[in-house]
Image (cartoon, rainbow, N blue to C red; front, side, top):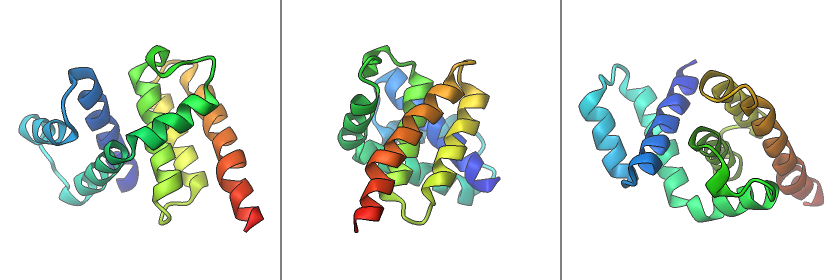
Length: 141
């Protein structure tokens, strides 16, 4: 549950960054200023994820574009887009987190924060990415 809360914080940071058109560091400072960080360990995990996404945003967005050709990034709602970004970052750049966990956690975030259609959309996109980008490369090795 601690990591889920960290992912929620990361999602809030990424959402704020994009909605307010500010840097990830400004989003982190705002979060600390306006919210009581009760558990520094959980916040640190969320902060690491959000910074990681911000650093790899071009790679991540290119993956999203590849797997959502009929839904350009500009048309995707901020919540779904940032849940995808978070999960894709974990899948490609966090070997300490199993891909299946990243996908399941993204679906749970979509249930909490997205629309009624978000969980199915997130699951479909991430499942395709996993099967074609990750699992396919593992079996080729």
